[in-house]
Image (cartoon, rainbow, N blue to C red; front, side, top):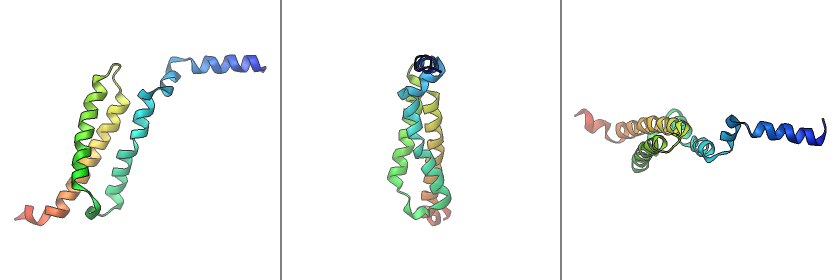
Length: 110
């Protein structure tokens, strides 16, 4: 395969519509954000609830709600961003429940 034909082949592959998406912020923004729900899920299993920050967990719950709405408001809708924040919402609510049970569990049962 000559240099010219290799270049043409690469150009054809990277100009296809489905691969163009991989080179956009519509793709890489959500991919980079997936660290938040992954970390929260890992913390649910491995970390003590005493290290959970209540204010930060509350902020992340609101943040994910806002960005789920934003992901559907932009055109074209960014479903990957929506799923990322949907997962983060669930994980942060799980962390919030753990925080409340740990800090207020005895008071809630009375």
